[in-house]
Length: 221
Image (cartoon, one colour):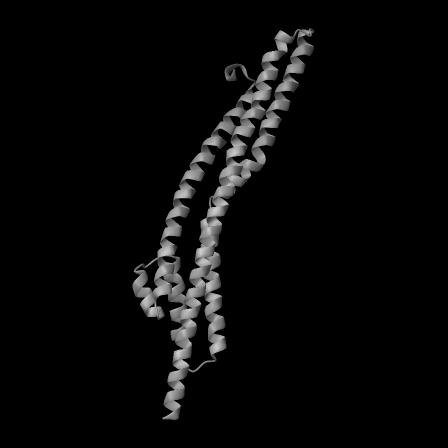
């Protein structure tokens, strides 16, 4: 009976109900976002794997924004900037640094919004327990004021107090389940991005090798 609950207990239960709604909303919106991101980066990865050069990969991807174009563009830009006979190992190192930064940025961006689920999952049981303790304390105060031990007087307050703990569990359990599910999906996304970075690095390495062979051929002639 929420209507007869004390103000503190009532506020706790209302807050936990809102947390449960936030949990469902965050899980749905973030799940849709991760799914779309995985499909987009998977298409880019297939294009990169099929390509024989960075320019061809950029054309096959057909996207102006996203992790895939960023990886290819960073590698191509570093190759253009270093196309002056620089040491190939140094060029590969700089390309790897660019790719690592893009991969870390993609992981950071995709993780945004999941922290609220972890927070609700970790704190909701304790918030509900606080409401329970507060409600039981008020019930014992009621016993003292009424100067009676009649269970009928304190039973409603105790029941409402225990209900706060139940609300805390209702908010926390889905939050933990949804957070773990999203964490697995994000892990899959990170793996695809990592594969894309490795594929781009291989393309860049091939182009450096081709350039080296051309230089050797020109020197021999």
